[in-house]
Length: 323
Image (cartoon, rainbow, N blue to C red; front, top):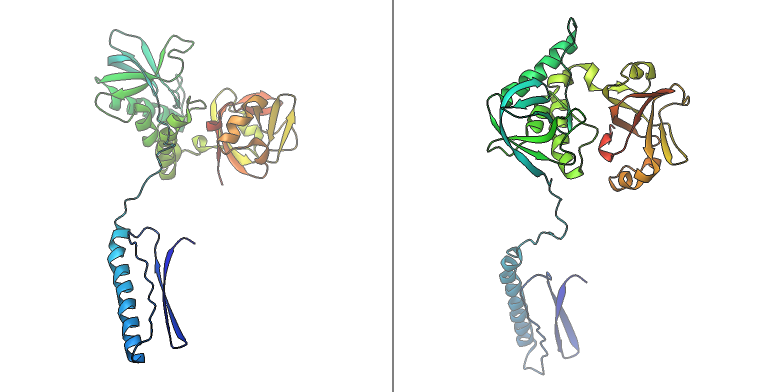
């Protein structure tokens, strides 16, 4: 029953008394006591023996208690949290910073920071608050990397279509990646594809902390998120990396695609699509697509146009609950 019980039984002259001593199961006590009194000269002697034996049992409990408290706590290490496994690419010295997520190695190629998106530099003659934010992202990267030695690590492809190296970057002798620093300062957002949930966890933690404090780009409503109930404004971000937030109206399946709908008019309203073959990965991450109806979520990705504005979600990291 979760405890060990020893019974002390006393019977004399037709009268009986019973004492139970209850011990926690982890106590190092192995006492079993049974006291049977034969005929004695007086009831007083019988009572005296009964009290003595009860006191012995109580003393044993008191001695066992510290031992029970001293038992070590055993942690379950059978399923430890997976680590972010990055593969070394090489080392180098930073020659110059090009924009908020791109720099050039001394005598080497350009490197693009993996797993994050940063505000672009302003176009010639461009004005407005976004100009300041794009320049701030570049200045932040310069402060982190200018003249520094760095190590490059990869997760997935090590080059993009422009021939730039794609890497997670670490300043010499630092455990935090440059990506984490930019996110923590509010100069970047986690990209639509990180490559592994274990690697995404630290990046999202840094992003959430900066968002909660309104740091950097999170102080500008333009970057915080677009609202799904305003599809025309979302569509204006076509071709750009955007966060869209809203309440899911319905989830429908057609062919090999799941349609997460935020409105009734598919030709105008915002929609997120998930390939049927990816459904299991989303469910394993606690985001079962068919159970998203009625939930408020935040989706990240590049806005495309298919009737109304649309984001294709290929990885669970692209969707988070916003309730």
